[in-house]
Image 1 (tube, one colour):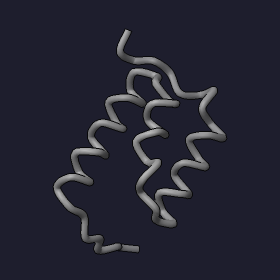
Image 2 (tube, helix red, strand yellow; image 1 turned 60 degrees about the horizontal axis):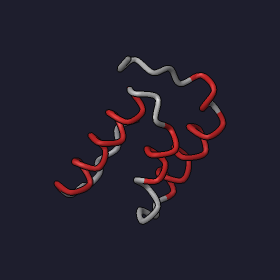
Image 3 (cartoon, one colour; image 1 turned 30 degrees about the horizontal axis):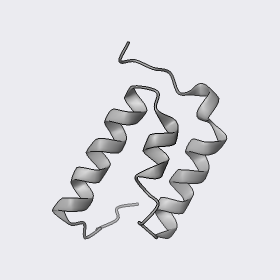
Length: 61
């Protein structure tokens, strides 16, 4: 299924920061980036990351 989503440049930058934080194993900092971003998909992503945080490896060592 294809989803067309309107996203701002600021939101794209935030997603890039989250990606970098998760790549470095900084789950808490990544989740904190979404504190002010309310959307059902963001809520689902946060729940997924929280549930699987023990599987997120620090690739930035």
